[in-house]
Image (cartoon, rainbow, N blue to C red):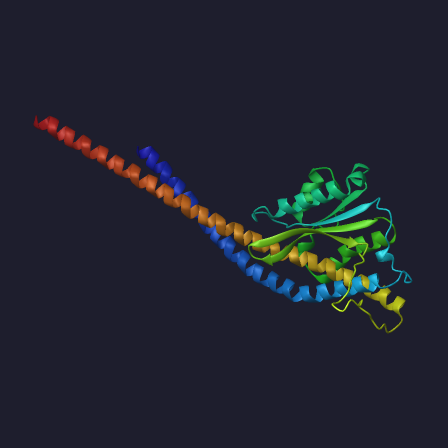
Length: 294
């Protein structure tokens, strides 16, 4: 009985130590989440408006502007950018992103994948490790981008997609990332990055958006397109970065709650076992005293 009590005490101490760690990690993630959330919330309206403007320009160009980044061609070679995290302990965050990327390959680019024409550009160590270990064709230059998360560094990674699409290395580029909603909610999405998609963009009056270009349209579009696409790429990374910290904070909160429940159950078991041991000892003492008296 004493051995069982010691084992339960050791388990209680172990769970209490783990609970202290999960509490600390939750607090750290909460602090990081606030900074990451501020960054994406400030960036998102600007990036969304730029994307709308870019799609409007491409959709209304009437085919008379040389826009290589919007060129539609037969898809033979594909680049898929998968934005995961560098570390784990964030629930199913990374596995869901990897599953989303694999689903995109399976549903849209199965033929290209069979021919070996699907390349993965992983952002984050978890995605890099998974795709390398499973034999995917991987570009390994920018998976450590979160160690230096700046616009200039991200622009270098975006240049791989932009230059690769322009020179024909890739015919399509997709980005798989987690869109940040709040600390408890992340939406795992896949978006076409290149070619720039045309949309039927009409306002309530039924009129298409119109722009006055200064200087001439061709020069302005050639200058603006790469900058806007770099901004979209940066926004996707900031979205996933905030989502990671939200997922980790939620996971650590759940782990702390589970530890509390386990402690409650173990303490009840410990008290019951201790009471049983005391009752047994008292019974033995009474029995022994009665035997001596008899």
